[in-house]
Image 1 (cartoon, rainbow, N blue to C red):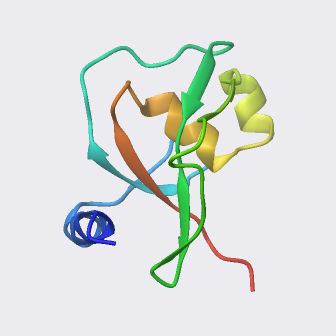
Image 2 (image 1 turned 90 degrees about the vertical axis):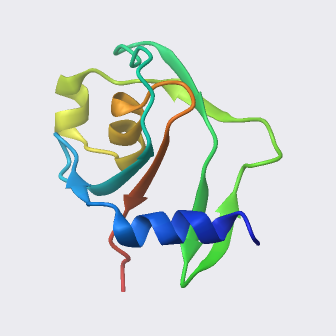
Length: 103
């Protein structure tokens, strides 16, 4: 529980930006200078989904999720928040995507 607090603190004090393709709102907490993934490259990541301040789904402690990073053309046809986050991240980065909740 203590590890989640700094992320919420940073989120409140960090400027939110928009992704290039899907216009998803995000905060880039940790931004390293390493290379970014290229389209078609296999990428792995950990995530957790929160709702109302509680983690409702997570793969931390398990094997990372993974998949091929789509081309910009494919991403423009079907924007996905996770793909947009991965496109701008280097190894070790931390990004929060603010995804609108369906009612």
